[in-house]
Length: 297
Ligand code: GUN
Image 1: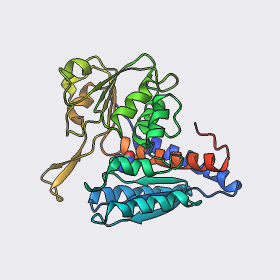
Image 2 (image 1 turned 90 degrees about the horizontal axis):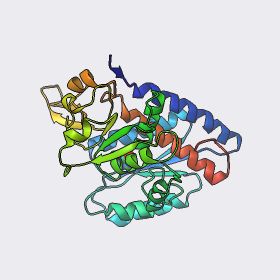
Image 3 (image 1 turned 30 degrees about the vertical axis):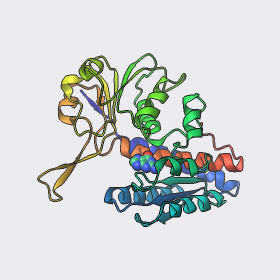
Image 4 (image 1 turned 180 degrees about the horizontal axis):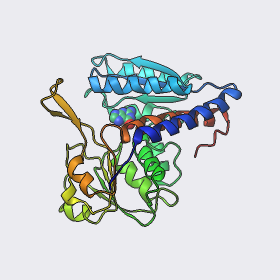
């Protein structure tokens, strides 16, 4: 029987744990604050950001939200980041990506104070992650790591294949899986659009993390029986539904769930974990800033 990995349940546990740590901060007179910045009129981005704000409220983090007209000059976003960097009540800053084309994403990420960079995308934090001394693990791969841990999926010595090489998911995911220590020590292969014979790589994988952004790219025929399959994808495809579309992952769920030992659904798998780990990083950031031991690695 294939086990369906319940990301909602594990995320609820993480949120409850984060809420306890928010109390530790409150005892020390600190209310953690997370600023989200949206410079986009993309409906999905708007939804993601509003869900992040709602999560903050649930665990006692003060949410601050700034919206910037997507046609505004990049300088407006930079000015907003500078202001948030200077604010003592803001411990974490998240600029929702993608930003408009006329804004240089790299410059945006470099401008955020690395100690408030709860996404873990600033080059200083990327470097620390690669060096095995992470300050903020990027939320999606960190969430995947937590899911594997929650379901007792052994990474040590496992053959893991990450499909996708994005800065947000694929690269940090591979880095977490190869680190020494719990949740790491996996023999990790990163596959991408130029990979030759993806099937051969996948057929040997004990753990597959699909994060290529291609609808139903991985199917059951490619998988090793019993593999753990983590689907990071969330793709809009045309469908005869009321809305005219459906959301599907990077994994063909029906065929993959016939072969996999455990699998995440879309939605309800990785998505809630990404949001939960953002709260985790925000509380960690507040603890670092105010020298309160909140007990988060
Ligand atoms: N857009 C899609 N995923 C993410 C994420 O993890 N962080 C930010 N800032 N933007 C995103």
